[in-house]
Image (cartoon, rainbow, N blue to C red; front, side, top):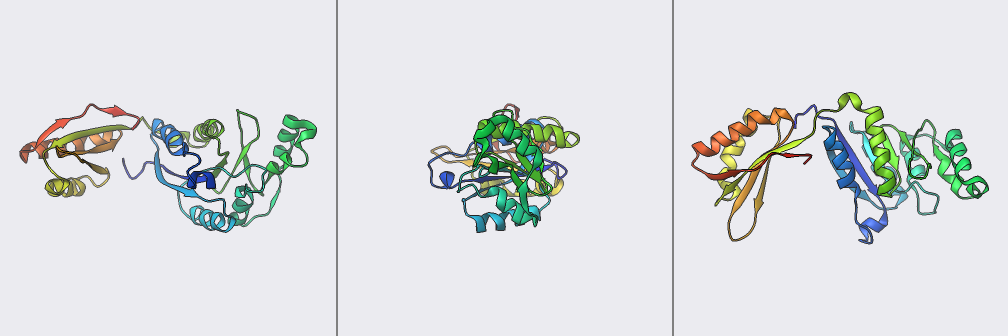
Length: 254
């Protein structure tokens, strides 16, 4: 991928993930949506339901250049700290958002009070993210997009954000072009990898060894059409070096 590809951070918030009671699905689900649009994941962080820790991490991510999807902790229960922590990290008060109040009242009527209405308490300056699943909105502030922890809600909301806010930065689908180099370890390929990295610094070469009785290394590039030139150079280098290798089929949406 080129250095100009827009990258996103992903925060997954919840003690249940760290305790192993639930498996994270946001890395795969949101990651697929990004790759379908020619975008990329910069990093993934899994955080506890700890207010001090959340404020520190949100301050850090708000100081970085990446837009961020944050999943979890925006409900109305006592262990949902994300809304308050986002406000503190952004340096703004937490107060009822009039549009969010109206949506929650329309959805739940009298049952919105006294607890569900807390989900309308958002950092001042927040913009709402529509929720097609149950209408209770997420919110955004400082290029951070705060979504529910439930993937069935969060992933359609993330798609809305990408298609409303980042259309101009989207490109074609990502693809992978790679080879399996047989009977070697990565050490035997380092000189070739270093040469390719110097010749094509804008594209990121990956190397994945496969353990087992038969040694082999998967070597290649991920990106758009721009990876064809460095991949062809990789194949040429392997042929000139006398390596035994097999070219993989091109794979989309990797």
